[in-house]
Length: 149
Length: 424
Image (cartoon, rainbow over all chains, first blue to last red; front, side):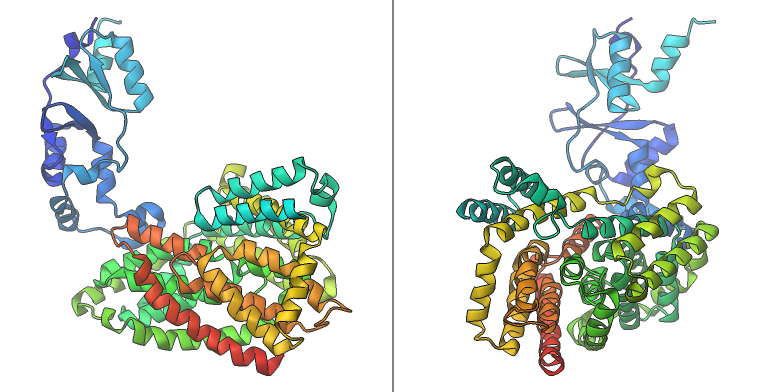
């Protein structure tokens, strides 16, 4: 089976999109992450749900996780406001990372290998410069285990 | 002689310009010195005159293990939040208390560790009371360098001086403690003036700080008790050096060993905070400086210093104090002190030009430690604080730090000047 056969349509966003909008989409549709595209429509990054969650935590709490305990409940409005002030670009790692991008004729094993190596919850399937769709980890497992009794 | 001086010079320039990682620079330099036979392995590894100072290496290692375990208990966060609540979130009081906590902690621990522990809490507190955290972070870095001056274990240059001079924990505390207390009082008063525009907070937000629960910071109460007991025993061991005749390095290693045994932690956890790079840096540096000792460069430096100071102890102290401070403001104070220690050692040794004049040691330590405050790159704590601030979206520019740091460095050195001249 080839990548294009299991790829599904998937929402994409630009790096300038509001972080709150991206977070809402992930939450509403239970997505493992989103594909970030550049002005030419080509993928530039994968924003995982974990990266959005990480942004909810102030950097100083990431430096010293003990502080999360002393702070008590962080008002949800404050977290939402922090996301509203940010863009998708600010949620992404500062250094560009290798993209989980595969060709449409790549095999399921190649897909799994790339996703495992990069620790990505999804992979983008391309046909030349066009995005064919996205394969998520759950879709991949569903494909592999589908007929197995 | 020329070969050793050239290698040392190249390494020093590489460290100062930060063109190459400092550990790589000293290890490469030490490797070249050894490979070309300027020093033998006997000189480098076994000699107390020209070799690696294992007392310093193991004292650092032992303290890193103890602090690494103590850090896991959450005691620093507890104390910082407790103090902030005692200050009722009023910005100046918060700054003064956090600075004093940093200074006291720095006297017992490494400066970098102290600021790494206090900076995240400071960011949280400033976030809650709605003030800019930059002045608070700068004040803490400055306080850490002042506080670290007071004890043998407070700052790496002090460890080097202690090991070569034979001066003990109590000597440091008695000779530097009082003047450091005066400096801290002056620093707190000065910070009221220097950062006066940054003490405006929203009263409603200030009230928010009272909702922080410091008790939640203590994650492992039994470990906290064990760690504090061991730390107290180690400090007692340091102070009883004159009675027990156990080197501080052995005391620290014993403390670390006992704490490892009774904590039941895994090696990955208790070794997590050991800065292997720092230990290697010291080892390489000792080999390089040892080669200068062996070929007689240090003797010549000592003679030059005697000639320049006209056989006068007060002039020698002032040259060491202000010279060390100036150089430490620009370059890493550890290689500088490692180089100057054998020079001063020769001068104050029996038969030396300034035999028995320990004031020279204190001038070197005060200059090297306090000079680091003058610029953003003068001390490791400054660099670490700037990095944390930047990561949290509050970049500290070189000049912003230096604007405050230079004033504090000059004021503390002006306090040290009459102290040295009158006391020694």
